[in-house]
Image 1 (cartoon, helix red, strand yellow):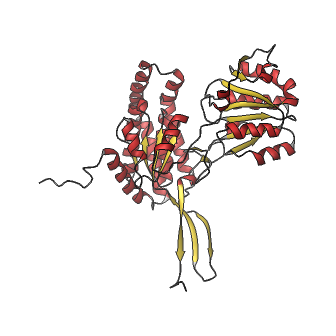
Image 2: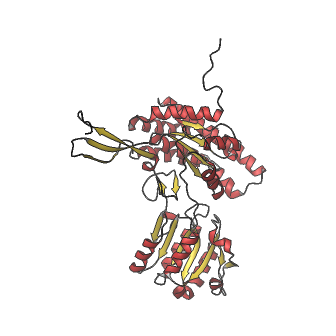
Image 3: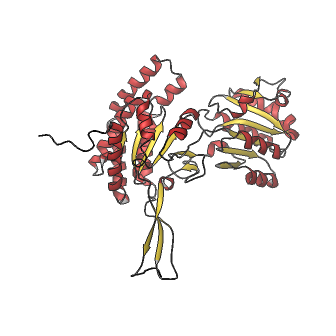
Length: 428
């Protein structure tokens, strides 16, 4: 007679979540050395099985091209041997990072003699919903393992073959290193229903992190019953103050916009103080033209475009809220720093804003008044990144205020608990 498991009647997604919860409980108390050994085993396995991974990825790429997917998206989807080696190197870098689990956040001995400590603990089961970037599969798995969390990975259907191969390699390496293989799982299924199930697995999944475009993030935030850490759409601004160094401002603007356009920390709006507009804008528009950027300009910017090489179109209201992720930027002239702040407060997604100025007073006022995850003074918006901040890898950039804000490294993948140690203490 066959004995049925109590989980056999559950859906594949729910069964995966139960397995992840059990794996998370086993993973949480493990010492750093065990987790690091597993990560190094993952890195080695990625290199050894590169041909298998690239072959699976080639099937995704071929299907994407057949479906008419843009080449920029195909490029993000594509894995080459060189890219796989780089991903493996990133995993080794994660292994080198300090382990946040067990860190004492604060602690003291109370007047009654009780010892009180607040310590970092893993979140538990982390669900990641993301688009066609197979590297995220490995990054998320590595960061979750290092911070003692189990992870449920739900990538896009367009990367299904790649993600299946990558997760297979990771699970084999993790299990071979003596850790629970179910700490890393690909959410079963390619349909939207599997995503909805993951978003409703409250009590099994502790937190969801969406990574992708605005539509994906809105859907997860609005439909999930599992707590969500909202990662960033990036309508980032560069404000050029009246007292800006023009050469510096041009360098920062072009780097912020064009160094890499398809990322959330790329600048999408340029604001220029009216007192510097005549000197700055003609040169800036030429520099943007040289970088291949189209400017969506308000009338005051258009007035400075004559005689430049710029590709300029008249801005419409939607431009001020658009995250282009392309070689486009909105541009406006403002009457003052306060008017720049007013514009940012109205249209920003809360990701990153930059001011270029030689005035310490202006820099201080801008940083006080602008409420985004990152405010840069005389620096590119492109620095808002876990690696650039020295955190190592990141799971995403949170644009909300609860639990985590800004680049999310290993500490942001933990919660805390209190340990109360007494000697027969009872409360009077």
